[in-house]
Length: 337
Ligand code: NAD
Ligand code: DAU
View 1: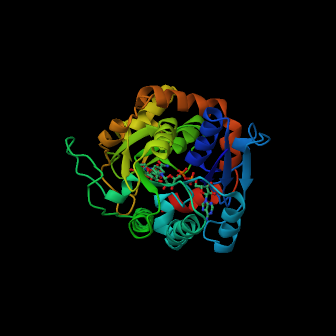
View 2: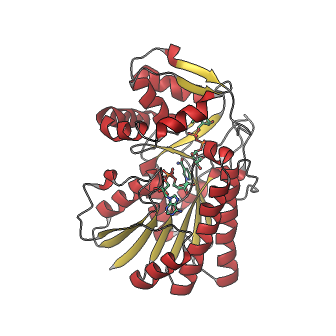
């Protein structure tokens, strides 16, 4: 039996990954370890919670004793590390927790992996560690692009990447680092642009666009991110970094207008608001290295966004319980000024 620890498996991407792996590999044991912060939610796993090979462990990744106890008990073969503070805007308001979770938490996990032994530690990172690109469509992030993070979030992720690299170089820990572009899809927390737009448009509320809306992101459906991590986990060469992206560059304005049009609403819902501090201009991934390993995305932006919008229409209950709670205070604070 293969034992896989998925950290952050109650969040957006980790949650999709847990379900993807249970479906694809019925013989694997999947251990979802999550501290259930504001971004963690277990209702998404109601259909799998009684499966014999699925387990949930509530632990803070920066709690060394808790982590060591669990590693000792379950003898993991693979660690796929998603758990993090993930929202750039929150890192501008409160950077400290990003260092605690993303840097200290990762280092605690690396120590446990080193002490108890593992086959592979996959560190799920982000393209934001490379900083940003100019609006020149011929330039892309490659694995050799220097790390130049601009936000406290991306600085904390870059710091954790460097620790993962160091544990490979110094202790020969078998690791891979993946750096993916912006994800979207089912169970995306409605603080991020796409789910925020869909949920607000469905409720006939205005959509806040930072600055002039011309910033560019490179969008990837979450299931294509999951298949990429699956491939890296099984076939990635130890110590290597793999960029993940599907060449789906869109301006924020294009994304918001697509959603409004699909839902048959008016563009008058668009509201231009004060720009994000240090707002990265453009992200774009060159995924050649991963394609050479055998990966190809299954969604285009058009098919993926249509599927995602329909999912939010069909699963209003899931996102309504989120936006009716503490989220209301967050939204008011974030968008008042
Ligand atoms: P998310 O915010 O939706 O989920 C994060 C999960 O981590 C939550 O379930 C939360 O409860 C858990 N968590 C937070 N702090 C914890 C702690 N101290 N101990 C244990 N669990 C904790 O994030 P996401 O969007 O799913 O991103 C997952 C990972 O993928 C992150 O590492 C992020 O940097 C990376 N990533 C995200 C994107 C994206 O577009 N969302 C793109 C590339 C990479
Ligand atoms: O590139 C990968 C990264 O993508 C991940 O590492 C992060 O975890 C993830 O949150 C995401 O970061 P972004 O900052 O790009 O995502 P976000 O959805 O917050 O913003 C996308 C773009 O939309 C960005 O240019 C800012 C803009 N935006 C965002 C919000 C929330 C708005 O214009 N208005 C908004 O209200």
